[in-house]
Length: 257
Image (cartoon, rainbow, N blue to C red):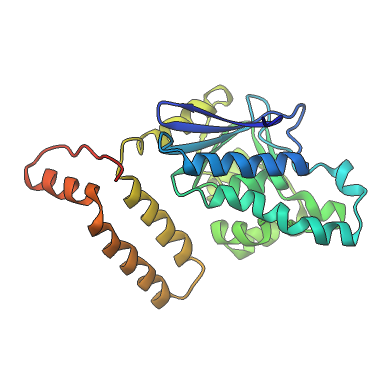
């Protein structure tokens, strides 16, 4: 049983819930529990979409600095790959994902949110990559995922300065997709991905993989990724269902196969 991270499933939506008071600091145990929850969400057929949520007060205020302070070079050589891959496990969930951000999402907390397809935050949220203030840089994807989302100049501003960004600025630069009242964050996040419950699961999976892999390669290679994913969907039951419903002017009832 996980101590600090659990997967809760309701209505086709899985919630990866962080619960390590007071600030959901991402120590090694939490990182590995995130990995396990992501794997479970990936495997379960009753999960069509995923919300990552830290609770009503805080998303995650970063790594456990007290634990990290005691680590030397060889310690981090041994740990850094596991740190990255534990959060990347969320990015690899082949289903729509959204981070529901309340309070702070800083350092590793923001890096976790960046692993999701979408981000919803409260209007009082603060996000940022303050690692530079510790004499280090983001080490769980921040230097790579942040510039892909907001562009290199804005990413460098946030990473070089370590400053906190409020909800309004985060929305303006495309770091978050929606800002709501703090009490409405989780509900809004569920609504955002709830539209995909009952959808064509393999088509959604293919679309996500085509976009994500395409961002990592040149255009021609990306187009080939798209072509292969597009072609493969003609082997699915949902493709037949969707096209038949279109021709018959009916609403498709997808089976997720």
